[in-house]
Amino acid sequence: MLVVGCLCIQGNDSLIDFSKLPDLIAIALLTCAFASVARRNDHPGGGLWLLGWCMIALHFIAQMLTGLHGWTGTLSVLLTLSTLIWAGTLFMRATVAYRHERASRWMSASFLGASTFYIATWLYWPASAWMHNVAAALLAILPLVIVYSQQRRKQHRLRWAFVTQNCVLAVTLLIMQQMLSQPVDLVFNVLLFSTYFGCCYHFAAYYRKLTTGAFISLFGFLAWSLVFVLAPLLRTWFPHLAVEDEVWNLPKYVAAVGMILLVLERQVEHNEYLALHDDLTGLPNRRLFQDRLQNALARARRHRQHTALLLIDLNHFKQVNDELGHHIGDMLLKRVGAIFQVRIRCSDTVARTGGDEFAVILEEPISRTDAERVAQTLAELLEEPIELGDYTVRTGASIGIAMFPEDASTPETLAIAADQRMYHVKHEHRQMEEDSLALLTDELS
Image (tube, rainbow, N blue to C red):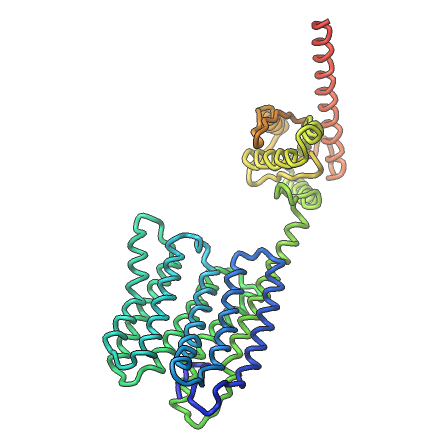
């Protein structure tokens, strides 16, 4: 009998082990549930997670076929073990922020290849000690080669942790191969423990905010890794203690539930973000703007300070929409929002409060002169030509300024005062344009 944590493979009269069918059905249902949730969410690692759970389902399929004789049985054992390694590597890779880098892809591929080769050497060449040693050494050598080939690039701490983990793993395997006469059970357990303990610290590094989903996922992966330690210890110390295979499979389901919760938590956070931010520009919307204005005035009243409110209306925006199309108008709004974000202090607030209307809250230190200077700077920036694809747009802005507490003492009255001054400036701009057009018409006639 070969026991590898939750894995139990033995030769028997049955060619297919149907006792694993409930586990396969349970994992298949969880995978479908995860796919349904991930499809409605843009979680950055969702695709890799889904592929990892497909590997777990393939693990149970292969485990059902390990009773086959000959090369098919050996191949089933190889797939049973390798798919667990592949799934763990995919879970780790999904939580790496720099996973799109070439070095990260090579790092994952090297571990997958080296670990699969290591398992194959024990299954197909069990008596070849030198091949086992070479395969174990590759687990450390390949990641080190990749890291040192990228010396000129910035090396992430998580990458060094992964390299260190593989080096410790390789040394442990080499020692066990030298000291034990039949280490096959233990070396596989050590390899699987290292993989899922790696999942644990990768998740801990990525999800620093310990939400319910993150905690359950961490606990699941930690328990999953400990399965490969506790199972052989119990078999050695308490050989008469029978533990059902379903007990060793429980951490899989815990990790799956935790990962589904992580996707749902991200969806909730995204929905909350959309409820308070403009979907087009990413700026705070009117609801969040009103909340921040109220808080800003409360701070100014408490500390007897000043706060300025700027209401900004884009000139000729309707003309841009009508003549160039709404997609160009959307591009213009995005560009204007980006311009405002760059020019406004991080302590202040820029919001999109309407179709072509923006608002800026300027907090201390601020005076009316400072607010007028900021408004003049923003107006001059919008007078400059803006490249939008194949078009060049020149727009302006009408800006109304209201100061707390001189002009108004409440958020509503302050917004009304700024709005009235903004429309007064807009009327002046329109009157100036009409006068210029009339003067040009007289000259031409």
